[in-house]
Amino acid sequence: MDELSTTLSALADPTRRAILARLAHGEATVNELAAPFDMSLPAVSKHLKVLERAKLVSRSRNAQWRPCRLEAAPLEQVDDWLGEYRALWEKRLDRLEEYIATLDSRTGQKEEAK
Image (cartoon, rainbow, N blue to C red; front, top):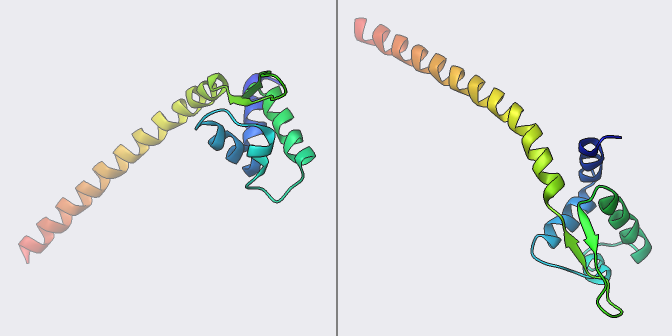
């Protein structure tokens, strides 16, 4: 699987997105990451492994602690990919706005004629 697909697959799960949101505020241990979830530590560890494979999370060693850290580079790839679609939708919305303005002006002209 290519890197973008791996990243998107990792982001598909709401638990993993929540873990990333927590890590956006700073490093955390597995226990800290598991606290808000109603799941076992092994289940949280499995989610972390998926995030690690997608290179969205890294772990370091600090004595007996292995804090997890957010790695944002893969998210930049997602943003770049989405940027192409964002530009497309912005153009479509601009055209819709122009069309609505045209309809509004026509409606205004009809009311003035009455």
